[in-house]
Image 1 (tube, rainbow, N blue to C red):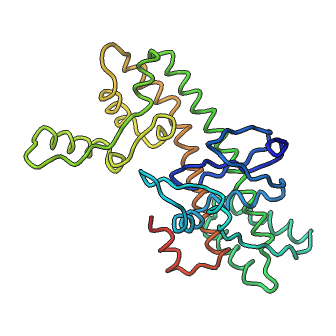
Image 2 (image 1 turned 120 degrees about the horizontal axis):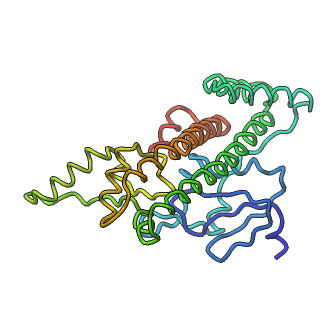
Image 3 (image 1 turned 180 degrees about the vertical axis):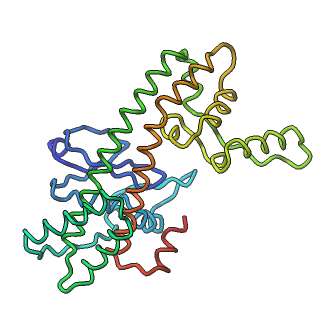
Amino acid sequence: YDEFEKPKIIFPDIAIGCRFAFDTEGLYSTNTTYIMPIDTDQRYLIPLLNSSLVEFFFRTISAFIRGGYLRFFTQYVTQIPIRRITFTTPTDERTILANDGIALYKEGKRAELLAFVQELLAVQPEQSDVVHDVLVHLAEQMIDLNKQRQIAVEDFMLDLKTILSDTQLQKISRLWTPLSAPKQGSKGAEKMYATTKQELGSLAERQLDLRDDIGLLNQYQWEYLLRGRLSGDYNLARLMRSFQQLQPAIAALDQRMATTDQLINHIVHRLYGLTEEEVAIAERR
């Protein structure tokens, strides 16, 4: 039990993809999750395990269950290849170089940062310890952005609770479930299918949950989904104002997280020495 109170990685038994979370609060988890105790200086594992490359690899070894979900049993997780880091760069030089890389990230210079990483890995001896430090910073940014998003989503949910009943709020917790392709000759179903595609675009092909996906919607899609999910008496004007006031902050955080996550993936590709062809295979999901 004392392992739960140490810094650790928590991950679910069943998940649609890699969902490794870092906990330093001594949380206890139930039998639907596993834990991996680590030292705080092993935080490098977090961006690595959540990368698209590791997920691609994991899909080649994990058992699948209905819906394409993966099983994160120990027998599979222990097969994940971890890129070893050589900690040889002098401390002062390592700090300066890591700060240079972090500055490029803060300035939004993505291409320059990736070129910087490539240079660090090409020198002899390689300076993978600097890349390690940059990845740790990016992982910490992802954790912080997720916390900010959680607060922003809770603010939105609290506002919705002042507008909707508990039953109505429950109804929109799932905003959209993809429609099956209509049978030929079914004019009503064909019209609904076409209308949905027009209103939601590519989002019509995926499940949309309120908390997870609100940042993806524009106000017209929000209104369309509300009209489809809610019936009876509700204040649409207030729901639209709530969206206009609180959703942009969530959308901005989603965009920053997506950009940072993609950057982590590209750095991991370089860390593992993938060619462009191999990257294309790993990203073809």
